[in-house]
Each structure stands twice: as structure tokens, then as C-alpha cells.
Image (cartoon, rainbow, N blue to C red; front, side):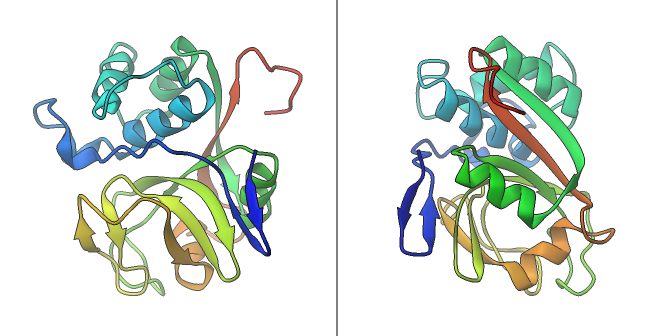
Length: 196
């Protein structure tokens, strides 16, 4: 359940996977989606992944279904660990907050290069784990983003529970306008009575 103190809400997503320490050749710079989904799997099915580099184990599962950048491969890999995942390109802040208040993290794909007024790039995935006035709280597997200018101020650290301002992060997520955010929602497979 969410840990709420005043206007702050933080899910107890204790496992933080850093993509930059991957031991899979050539994957560290490009496995943000897998590291992000692995954090959600570990949160919902704590016994599913073990060890500090278990996102590498998860990545091997993803690779059986396709590339780390493929939403369908991620959905199939999550299912192997007892987690139902749903991909959408219509995410918004209301959905994000609804998921968090219901006790579920939300994977979000956004543009991390260029200024927040004109974001660009191939995209990056992080896990939404909480919120506080004016900010979303995220587990960013690459490190700590400079939300105003783009790029990273810290790589390989500083991304656990990092606060990104709505003002500069939302334009990076809803690039095509309100309700256009890429996201992945999660539920335990044995809790299908809860809407995904």
C-alpha cells in the first residue's frame, strides 16, 4: 500500500535496478524498459527476481520474446513472472496518480534529450513510484535527469525516488499533447478482479 504523509505519497518499491551495471554485453545503455519493468515485477511478485542485478535475469526472459524496446516482449516477460502488464499511448497525470493511489507503480516512456520546451530523442523508461506537491517521484534506472535542459546530471546513481517537476517532466511524457503519454500498467496475475 502507498505510504502517504500529508500530500506526499510513496509506494514501497524497495528494489531499484540500475541499468548501467548490466553484465549483458551491449545492453546497459539500452535496457531502461527492462530495468523499469523488472522493478515493477519485483514489487508485485517479490520472490520472482533475486539479487542486485536481477534486471539482467529479467532481460534474458524479455529476449526470448523480442527486443528490450518492444512493449509486447515486455508484456510476455511480465506474464512469465505472474504479472499482467498493459501498454498504452494515452497516459496522463490523472492516470498516473490513479495508479499510484491504488497502490501500483506505472512505467512511463518519455523523451530525455533537449529542453523541456522542445524535447527530443529516442525515448527512455522510468517507474513512477510516488508524488509530492509539484513533483512526481520516480525510480530512474539511468540516474538523475536534468528535466529542464535534458540529459543526465548523474549517471548510474541518484535515480531512486528522484523528484521530477511536473512542469518540466510532463511535456517530455505527453509529447503529442494531453493524454499522449506512453505507459505500462501492472497487476498481479492472481488479482485479476482488479482493473488493469
